[in-house]
Length: 142
Image (cartoon, rainbow, N blue to C red; front, side):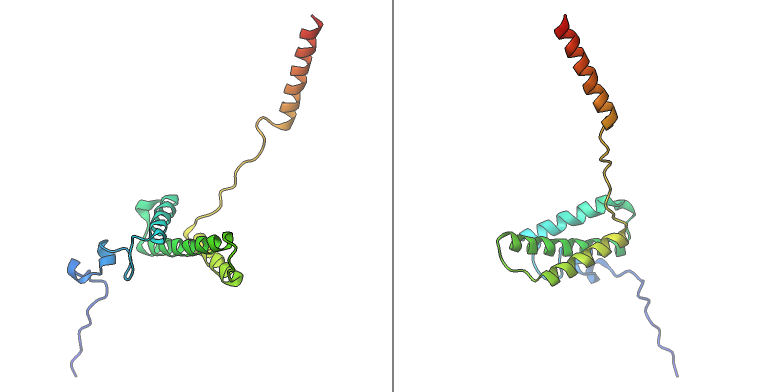
């Protein structure tokens, strides 16, 4: 029996054999890239990639970024419905939010905590206020 040669899945296809999405000619397999949703999705992809090092992202990471952008767009759409007083399935909203958070974590995106320590410190501020008070009292006494 003769063995059949299998073509490797890793041999790059010619440009004509790739999809328009791979070639960068289309944003989506189906649908238009001109809607408000698509524009927001594209903006989010760029913002998320910039939060990481855009020059070192793998295709897999870019796919996760696209998925995170999709989930965020849907969350924003649902939040917009809520702002209009419309009913939204909160279970669906929370599931999307959970998936979004997990994808962000797997990409290494994390919340950056701000340093909210008052500058100057409270003690330094109180010393400053006391010094100002003394200066005013001395000026008033003169």
